Length: 542
Image (cartoon, rainbow, N blue to C red; front, top):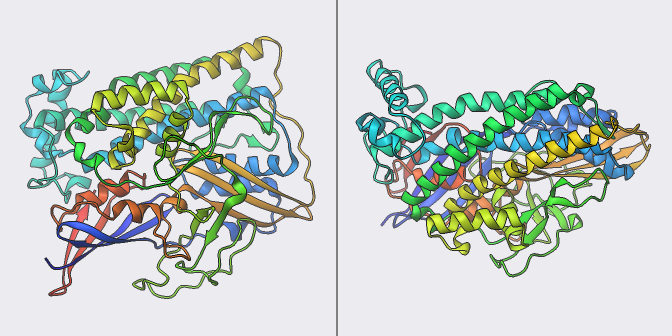
């Protein structure tokens, strides 16, 4: 069979635009290129500024996983000065980051990933009464959703669904009409829930997205000490937790029961997790989720994480130079060559850990903590494996990655109540301190590590004469979506795509399933090129 080249461009994300190129032979992907086509240059903007400005600028990188860049920048300053924060500040930071995870993962599953599995139009054929027996939705509610969909179809107002792969039927979409109706209904329910959760972040952060309450040394939200604010946050959290347990977990298990084939492809070999959710305000505090490195899918040994082993490769990126450099070092600057070249083909650099390719994200967090005996994670992984019939090694897959994100969400929801109770108890003891005065060191280097919803995020700051001399951001999508390195080793997304099936080259939904499982965002255009006759066809994808 002739080799086909499939180009997905742009497969956009909030941090930039992603282009995916694959070569397909005998209905399997044999080669892949992950191409970031947008140059941001946030680090350049920061040079010469007061280090305390960094948090306000860097969180504008992303408005979906908002707050995490602000936290990483703030932690980089605290790391540079070995500065502890008050107990209350640690609780507040964990509460905001925790509910951010709940928000982000719900948005990902329902609004960025679900339509890779759900045929919205097939829901019109469903029996609402039968569909209601599959979940917690009522027949009346499902009938209303069905009527709304019917009105969209009759009025030719399908909007973002208009050119979806499932239009007209697709062999890789396997849900029954009733299952499609249930999940479509939950898609709409999740839109309302994400608004509610965002209010929870704003209670402490002042606003959302881009909360403005972090400073090196703690937080500034004194109103967050008031009982009514804590009570309001708790009420929002409890609604979110119920939605996660009643809808999200059940829906992921439903998808897993039908799409078991997604556990046979899309995996990578190595995983890297940063620790997260500090137990206390000490700079060297232990974390609820531990850091760890998994090599060659071996769960029998978790290697300790060492940030000193991180380097950035630019051999196949649009930057000056060929040799890898440390995160504190400036790159040689941008140097665009050719979009279609195999030599340099991405604005993403290729981060490496000890010269190894690393996937980061919920799968890394869940697997490494499962292997280290985290009780909450072990319980949840065991329950999911039992419900789906999967084996632990099958977590290294497209389906495993999607399930891990749900497991991480449920685990965090089980920890948040303890943080609320601990925060209340600490205030009741008379402690109302939320920040310690921080002094600019003049000259120092620091690293801010955050295990964000999409994975390991690090900010590397070099302060000279009280100003930012250099700052480098290594974000999760750089780790996952980066290109080949100096050794020619493919990045995690490229690795995950190679070997994946493509049932219909004109509508390669399997590509979307793999790439979306890493959590990119939004709709994209697909161009399919037949190398024999050089014909190009154009499609819209979700």
